[in-house]
Length: 143
Image 1 (cartoon, rainbow, N blue to C red):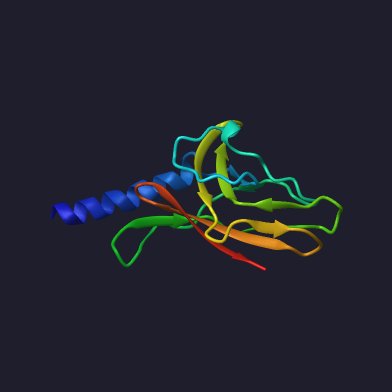
Image 2: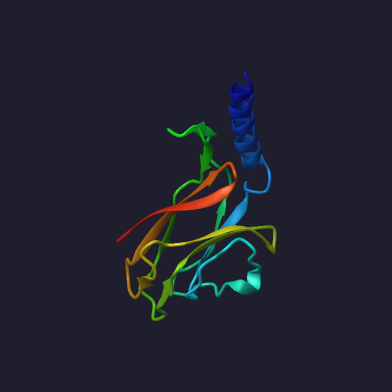
């Protein structure tokens, strides 16, 4: 029965993350060529600055669930970052999540970094996934 309790506890932990620091956190893109390792501070990141960019508040996370391996997970809503056609271009190497004004909750480098934001319509959609742990994994779709 210990295995059942452990799975229930993992799901409860994932559910509690949804209402703790992760609700109302902000997602930011970073433009420095950097590989997050888990001990970052705000000064570790250079926030991207292309035309139309703004960080995005993630108000709530999805319902906690078990994946095929029995790990408890929750995912953010999809966040889209899009260049608006202005003159400022930049790149994004990944994203980071911030609680309040300064607490880094996690960060992830994109598998195919850097992603260029060079003109109108260049975009990136990011879904952050928390696995209990928690560790952060990134699923990104971009065009």
